Image (cartoon, rainbow, N blue to C red; front, side, top):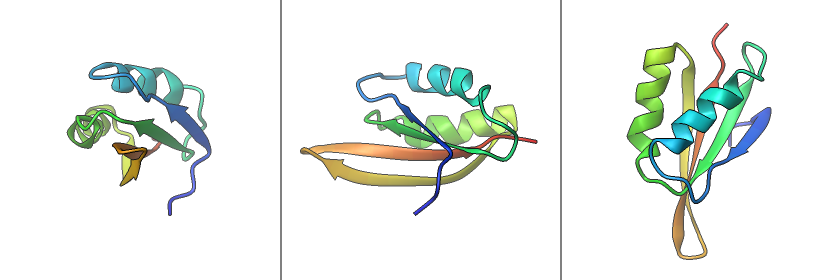
Amino acid sequence: MIEADIKLDTLGYFCPMPIIMTSKKIKELLPGQVLEVVSDDEGIKKDMPAWCQTTGHEMVGLEEESLDLQKVYKAYVKKAK
């Protein structure tokens, strides 16, 4: 399990909102800190790595779990230095 410094809940939001919310939230972190983005939008599996590649932040993990008969995704992003 990856240890995150801050958690961002984007449940109920769909593309492009989880990425937009991540973009705003990551600005609050210090370089090297990890943001956990919780989403029920399956698109995050491809959108988050693409966003990280574009912005220079590092995608350090993606977890998938079932919660109340729905899939929940946890993307972990380390803020660039």
